[in-house]
Image (cartoon, rainbow, N blue to C red; front, side):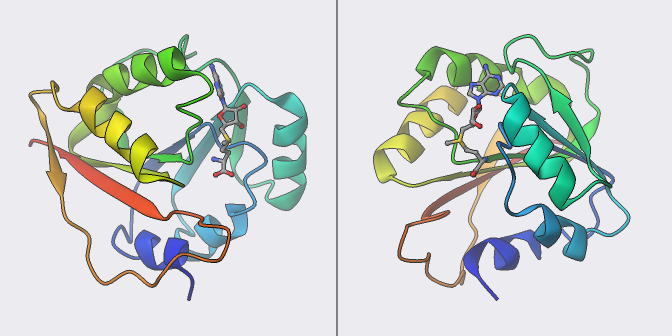
Length: 162
Ligand SMILES: C[S@@+](CC[C@H](N)C(=O)[O-])C[C@H]1O[C@@H](n2cnc3c(N)ncnc32)[C@H](O)[C@@H]1O
């Protein structure tokens, strides 16, 4: 089992998942494999990537939208939000704004998972999330090492206070 699959096992039965900036989601089948009954929304602004994602896994709702102008009301509704490899160096203001909205999107007790390729990116995300009074970080231990490309090398998990 790879690092990502192993991480998903901590969250066995989310009801509604948002994969923010999912790209073409080469992990779509890993989600479905572990979360057979979950509603999953993959959101990205890259329509070509979403088409490829749809061909991989048509049972997921692939949504072409801007992370800074979400097409659903900002009220708690997701019990898991995933931001895998957000390009925080490329478009920092986008991700800063998105992470600001996360507490309003997460249900009480819900989780946010952020994985990055580098410690610097991970630290930037930590700084953005630090002011959120209703989020706390939880440690995840014992994950297998990342692959040679460094997928999910740095992992942060937050929980919204109940
Ligand atoms: C580095 S890629 C990561 C893709 C995928 N999560 C992965 O791990 O392979 C970052 C993604 O964020 C998306 N993104 C960046 N800014 C966005 C925005 N304003 N709205 C929606 N998606 C955005 C990009 O289109 C891209 O697919």
